[in-house]
Each structure stands twice: as structure tokens, then as C-alpha cells.
Image 1 (cartoon, rainbow, N blue to C red):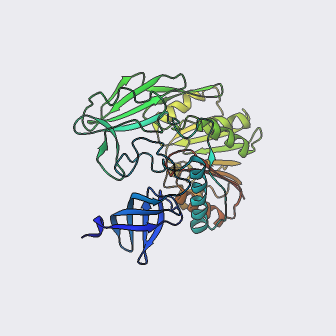
Image 2: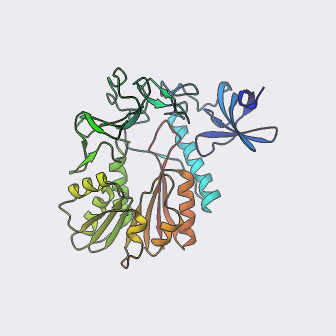
Image 3: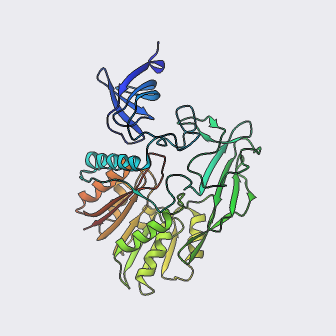
Length: 391
């Protein structure tokens, strides 16, 4: 029998980055998905990677006290790949996420930290997602991908989704190969935009842009562009950035990977019309949204370009830089370019990339003033991390 069909009984150790727990079999490391630390489980090996294996739980023999009934009805080994931690009590999931981030910071960043992930807002662990993208199968059904698969799972009642977000979508037929971008905005209006399969874009319901608010400021953001998926995240992060930046009137701030300019708005309020804010992002749609939303703040410059090109050769500097890079992190080249900025607020949505970036800052002589981890993606292993660094 091949290893890919081998069934094993294992006792799991600590959680690893990426949603698995670490176990061992005959000296070999086995990364076990759908398990919690300290459980005895029967698993099916699904992939060999040289010195280690990947396996899925098929039966829980001795459950952790942190295991609960699935909070997402379509998640699991044979379900969709949406919610890979839906079987953990929410408070336990936040503790585990904190442990994973701490491990990555120590191993990859050379920085010791401990703590648990914090809940974002008051919505809880289900119904928090107001934006989602679905793919369409060859048969014309919209669905979520199974874990690491091109196959789509046809049921859409994911535990993450805000009520009504995908109502009626599963009963319709869509062009095979298309993508559906769906958002419920801050007025409760739903928007559906179809892209593909031949690059055409069509508004199916609502409008191409969704209305989003933070405080008394409004953004009109394309449904296909980036906006935080968690209902409460934009307001929570905006307040955090504003307070952590410690800006004064007349100062200069950079908002890098700035999207629609949410953080730029918070920074611009603090520096006032005698200050300057630069926000940079590659997305034209996000840049348009930023220019419109921040039109009453002429001291904000919106640049549509890569962060590397925008900063290379730049003679002026900033008092504060805020970075919210993609999952791969900012990396050494970008951190080298901003190393002269005395105060940096760095945001990361992938624990290992974030830890490596923190290590780069430490190598430039920065110290960590504050580090927080947010459970911004409940029911999943994903986190949002924020480091406030001084030099």
C-alpha cells in the first residue's frame, strides 16, 4: 500500500504555522490538519515531502477539551477549504494562534514574544466576512475550492459569511471559469461583479463600487479591489494606526501598500494641512478610491506604483512609515529603503513573513515597542499581526 493511502494513529504536538499540528511517526515529522494539540487521532497520509508527511484527520480517538462542534457546516476533510479551524473553541483558537506567532517570531525573527490573538470588534467568530470571491466550475456552479485543489465545493453556507451575502448565488448558473466578487457594503447593499472568463467585467447586482465608511468618512471601493473582509477590521486598525503613530501637526508619514488610503486618512488627520502624507499602492482601482475619499486633504499624495519604485532614490524621508504588505511580506529590499524612518508600524497577515520582516528591522537597529496579534480571520488559522518599531 502506498504511503498516500496509509492510515496511522498519532498523538499531536503543538500547532504549526499553516493550520496543522506537528506529530511524529517512526522519527518522521507529520503535519496533521484538522487536529488540535494533544489529541490522539487516526489520520490518512495525503502527501509525502521528503523527510516529512502531510496527513488529514479521519477519526478523533481522544479529543482535546478545546474541540467543539464544527462552526462552519461545509468545512472539514471532505468539505470546502474555507474554515480549517472551525472545530476549535474560539478562545482556544486565539490562544493557539498566539502560540504559532510566538514560535515564528522566535525561530525566524530572533524576537521573543508571548500572548494570544485578540478578537476584532464585537461580531464574534461567525458572520464576520462581508466580501468574498467565488470561482465557477465547468458546470456553471459557484463554489469554494477544496483545500489545495482546483475542485470546487458546491455548497456556499460557510460560517464566515455575513447573513445574506451569497443568498441565491448557489441556485444560479454562471459562465464556466468566471469569478464572482461579492460584497455587502456599509449601507447593507449587496453588490455582485462577475469577471472572466474572457476578461470581461459585468455588474450583476448593485454597483461596481461598494460604499464603505470609517467614522464620518466614506470610500467608494471597487468590489474587485482590496478592502478588509472582516466587518470591524477597518475601524479597529485605523484607530490603532492613528494612536500608535504618535504624529504631530506638520510631520510627514508614509502609507505603503496603502490600498484605498484608509490608514492615510488616519495619518493625515494627525499631521494636518501643514504636514504631508504619501500613500502608495499598485492598484489603480484602490488609488481612484483613495483620491476621491481624501479629496478634502490636499496634503495627501496618492501614488499608483510599486513601493520599491516609489521609494528608490527618494531624497526626503518620513517621521512615521506604515506598511501593510501582501502575504509574502515586505522583505529585505523594502525594509532597507525605509530603514532611516524613526518610527515604523508594520502589519503582516502571514506569521512567517511577518516574523522575517521583524528580524530585518531588528538587524537595522530597531526595537519593538508594541506587538499585537489579531484574530482577523476567525474559523481559520490566519492572523493579522502589528508591530510598532522605533529606531
